[in-house]
Image 1 (cartoon, rainbow, N blue to C red):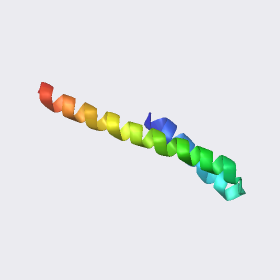
Image 2 (cartoon, one colour; image 1 turned 90 degrees about the vertical axis):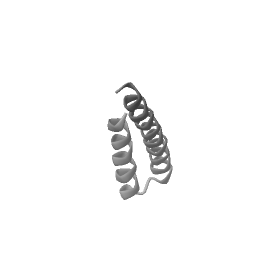
Image 3 (cartoon, rainbow, N blue to C red; image 1 turned 90 degrees about the horizontal axis):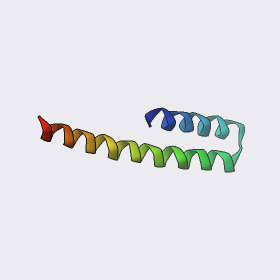
Length: 53
């Protein structure tokens, strides 16, 4: 999941450099959504791991 976040972040940066506003906004939006999903899953894993120990 983190890999996809980084990939979309890189695509957004490259698109912003070349000035493609629509592509940059879409890629940045996807990267942001994936980042928050990753954070939520990480926190759930962290909490579940502490309960099982």
